[in-house]
Image (cartoon, rainbow, N blue to C red):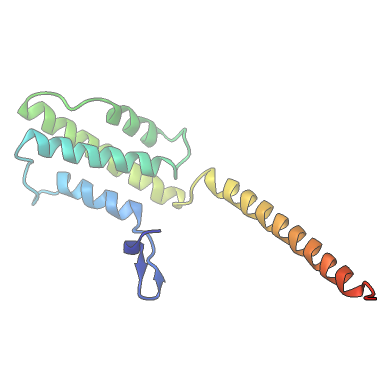
Length: 148
């Protein structure tokens, strides 16, 4: 954990991924937002949208059609040319928006990782309990030995 993650009273909760993705989508799809000026701006927005797709992909079931189409579109490169690149960016933003809707419909709970973490945590707690019990038994045994 870095210093930036710590607030005055402890860890700061991580920003909601769906909100971050919706903000990036709004940068592309909102009518008040200007079109990206340069090819670098288009690349940056496409990179951010691809990042949101990969983060949100861990939260929905892998067979979700919105996830598959967003991943397929995200795996393509940004086309050359002014209009084709902007059209691609709009399609990528729409696919990300559909994925955000799928995440919200699914409930936003990671599909596989929640169970795996729970099992590991339980296993670690069992090991801690066994070590504590052995240490306590050694302490009781050492206290009961007669000193001569």
